[in-house]
Amino acid sequence: MSSKEILRNKGRLAEAEMKEKHLRLRLEGLVTAMRDNLDPFAGAENLPLDVVAAEALEAAELQIELKETLGTIAALKRALGR
Image (tube, one colour):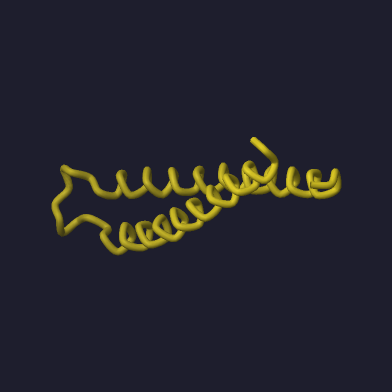
């Protein structure tokens, strides 16, 4: 691998790692919000299940994107010999 390719892949790795951190932060925020909305002491009729459902769908999409990003990171690390 040429030095140009190494630099390009290091840049891609840095971008992917920043994306991973961003996705994890967003996902953790949604999980916290869902837990807060699913108050075990509130009656079922008072739970904002429509909000929780929307949060769960967004969290599922983020989880898929996070897994893809982790795969990209692993591939870039292998290419860089890490």
